[in-house]
Image (cartoon, rainbow, N blue to C red; front, side):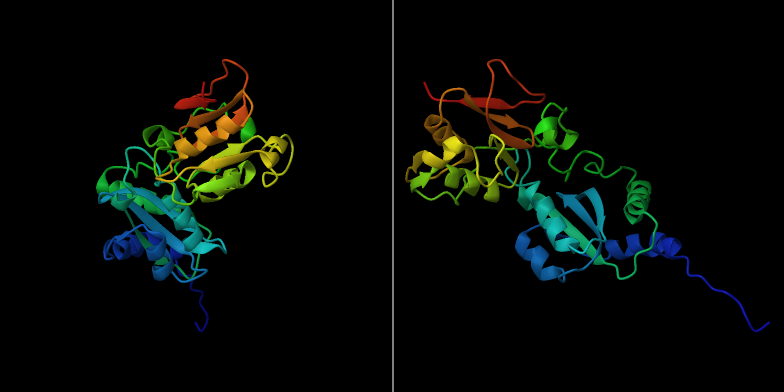
Length: 257
C-alpha cells in the first residue's frame, strides 16, 4: 500500500507532556515587570498561579491580547485585598504555538487535580471574573471575593496633594485602583461623571493618601445622601436611599457629621 493517513493526537500529547513541561519551570513573582519581560507580545498559551507555592489557579489564553493583559489583570485581583500579599503570588507560563479545539484549561485542571489530589482553589471561585455591572449589585459575592475582600486602607500614591476638580479625582481613582470603582453618572458616560462632580472641588492634603481618605473627601464635597459602599470586590459611590444595603457589604461611608 502506498497511501495512509496520519493524524497527530494533539490532546493526548498535551495531556501527557504539558504538565511535565510546567513542572520543569521555576515560579516567578507575579509582577507587571516580570510579566512584560518574560512573555513575548501577543503570545498565547497556558499559565499557572501559585500562592505561597501552592497551585491555586490554572488558565489559558488564545486571544489576540495574549498573556500579558490576562496576567496583569490577574495581578490586579490580588492587589489591595485583605488576607493576601501580592508578593506571595507567583506564576509559570508556557507559550503554545498550535491550539487545538479541545479545552486545554479543563485538561490541565483535571491532570493537576489527579496529581496533587486537590483542585486549584481559585478556579471556579470567581477569581478574575468580569464586572457584573450596576444592575447586578444585588448578586451574592463570589467565594474568592469573600475570602479576599478589597482593602480601602491601602496607600494610593497616584492622587497628588492640592486642589482637584472632584470629577478629575474620581477618574484618577477609577483608572488606577486595582479593583472596580463605579459611581453614579445620572445617565452620562462614565468619563463625564455626575453633573455635580464637574463643578465641585476637593483639596487633597499632604501626607499618605488612602482610598478611604479619598472617598471621605468626595463624600464631604457632595450633597447629603451620597454613600460610598465597600463590597467584597469593588467600591461604589451613589446617592442611596436610607436603609439600602447589598449582599456581602463590607462597610458604608457617608458624609461626615
